Image (cartoon, rainbow, N blue to C red):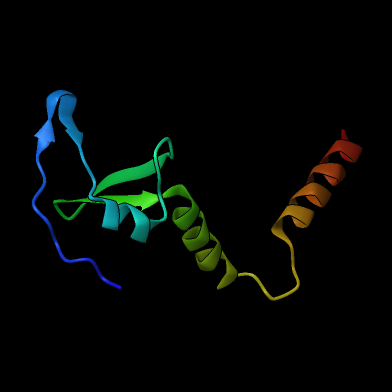
Length: 84
Protein backbone atom coordinates (compact mmCIF):
# COMPACT_ATOMS: atom_id res chain seq x y z
CA UNK A 1 0.00 0.00 0.00
CA UNK A 2 1.46 3.37 -1.04
CA UNK A 3 0.86 6.16 1.46
CA UNK A 4 0.20 9.51 -0.20
CA UNK A 5 2.44 12.50 0.43
CA UNK A 6 1.60 14.43 3.59
CA UNK A 7 2.55 17.85 4.88
CA UNK A 8 4.61 17.75 8.06
CA UNK A 9 6.43 20.46 10.00
CA UNK A 10 10.02 20.69 11.02
CA UNK A 11 10.08 21.31 14.78
CA UNK A 12 12.75 22.63 17.15
CA UNK A 13 16.15 21.13 16.55
CA UNK A 14 15.35 20.31 12.92
CA UNK A 15 13.28 17.28 13.90
CA UNK A 16 10.84 15.87 11.38
CA UNK A 17 7.90 13.83 12.59
CA UNK A 18 7.22 10.91 10.23
CA UNK A 19 3.49 10.04 10.22
CA UNK A 20 2.58 6.71 11.82
CA UNK A 21 1.27 5.17 8.57
CA UNK A 22 4.58 5.91 6.86
CA UNK A 23 6.59 4.52 9.78
CA UNK A 24 4.56 1.32 9.63
CA UNK A 25 5.03 1.08 5.86
CA UNK A 26 8.80 1.50 6.34
CA UNK A 27 8.84 -0.98 9.21
CA UNK A 28 10.44 1.49 11.61
CA UNK A 29 9.59 2.33 15.18
CA UNK A 30 10.69 4.39 18.13
CA UNK A 31 14.42 4.05 18.73
CA UNK A 32 15.17 2.50 15.33
CA UNK A 33 18.06 3.85 13.28
CA UNK A 34 17.30 4.94 9.74
CA UNK A 35 19.43 6.07 6.82
CA UNK A 36 18.71 9.57 5.53
CA UNK A 37 20.15 11.11 2.38
CA UNK A 38 19.35 13.69 -0.25
CA UNK A 39 18.62 12.22 -3.69
CA UNK A 40 17.99 14.63 -6.57
CA UNK A 41 16.98 17.37 -4.14
CA UNK A 42 14.60 15.13 -2.18
CA UNK A 43 15.00 13.76 1.32
CA UNK A 44 15.01 9.96 1.38
CA UNK A 45 14.48 7.93 4.55
CA UNK A 46 15.15 4.18 4.57
CA UNK A 47 15.21 1.57 7.26
CA UNK A 48 18.62 0.02 7.81
CA UNK A 49 17.04 -3.39 7.19
CA UNK A 50 15.73 -2.25 3.78
CA UNK A 51 19.09 -0.73 2.84
CA UNK A 52 20.85 -4.01 3.66
CA UNK A 53 18.29 -6.00 1.66
CA UNK A 54 18.83 -3.71 -1.33
CA UNK A 55 22.62 -3.98 -1.09
CA UNK A 56 22.38 -7.77 -0.93
CA UNK A 57 20.12 -7.83 -3.99
CA UNK A 58 22.61 -5.71 -5.94
CA UNK A 59 25.49 -7.97 -4.94
CA UNK A 60 23.51 -11.13 -5.69
CA UNK A 61 23.26 -10.06 -9.34
CA UNK A 62 27.06 -10.33 -9.60
CA UNK A 63 27.68 -13.47 -7.56
CA UNK A 64 26.86 -16.91 -8.91
CA UNK A 65 24.31 -18.87 -6.88
CA UNK A 66 25.93 -21.01 -4.20
CA UNK A 67 29.06 -18.85 -3.87
CA UNK A 68 29.82 -17.03 -0.64
CA UNK A 69 31.79 -13.80 -0.69
CA UNK A 70 32.51 -14.21 3.00
CA UNK A 71 34.02 -17.67 2.43
CA UNK A 72 36.11 -16.34 -0.47
CA UNK A 73 37.35 -13.43 1.64
CA UNK A 74 38.29 -15.71 4.53
CA UNK A 75 40.16 -18.04 2.14
CA UNK A 76 42.02 -15.05 0.63
CA UNK A 77 43.05 -13.83 4.08
CA UNK A 78 44.28 -17.28 5.06
CA UNK A 79 46.38 -17.52 1.89
CA UNK A 80 47.86 -14.09 2.60
CA UNK A 81 48.65 -15.10 6.18
CA UNK A 82 50.40 -18.27 5.00
CA UNK A 83 52.62 -16.21 2.65
CA UNK A 84 53.75 -13.91 5.50
